[in-house]
Image (tube, rainbow, N blue to C red; front, side):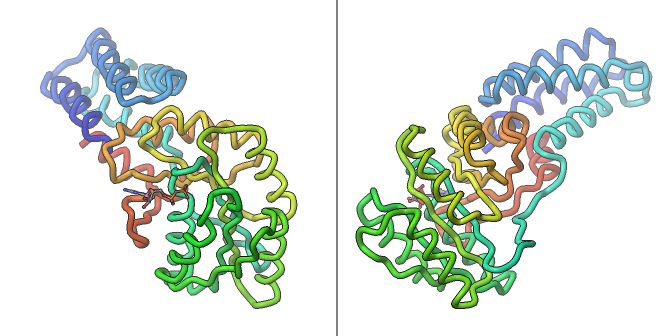
Length: 296
Ligand code: GDP
């Protein structure tokens, strides 16, 4: 991800840093190119606009233009703004609640929800020594519950016993009860997805949230879907008070727009990123590292 954006920006900044003195017009011209590069990377238009305005305000001041290395100063301003847009600091999962801590995953079908559920559970067990129970609430897609069970076996994570015909809210309640009775630290609820956002999906997710009262409600979104991922995040946020985002397929050749827009549009932090199909392909999201990667 970010390869073409990085290439475009390094061209712009090479030109800028090679020059000695810079005029306001030079900076404006460079920012015009940055704007085009961000739009081509599929970053949401309002986010691009705010970004460029913010950078311009800081970069055309005398402090920057009169400095010994104005080009590098401009690049630094861009870097700092990128970090800010991406969410400033790395935000991890919040497990500070009484056990069992509920973590609900929501998102469209195919976004990587079930895989991410198993990845997160595995990580909490292995790294943080938490005892985790996973439950699939997807009663609509045939074999969805079975898929989570298989992933649980691969990851060494327990899954809630499947009761055929049980509705999602009842499964969620049973999962939280089993979690409490059997001494689990964390209960993960993998909700059903749809091909597109619809009222039925939202009502189901909201009902599960009301019944299980999860401490974390994470949206799983596919980075490859660009601006659509941001629209989906916004829609879920209106209904379920998302606490964070898991951005998947960051290992693919997505242009990066989703990662860049997500925080600014939804106000929700990207907490984790999926970087492959394997169960250990999950990483923390570090705004500063991402910004440094984008700027080469
Ligand atoms: P769900 O319908 O949202 O539960 O999606 P799944 O978890 O079944 O994932 C759909 C497909 O995406 C599967 O083939 C996963 O292996 C794949 N997948 C999930 N996350 C990632 C990721 O971060 N990177 C890559 N390359 N593939 C992923």
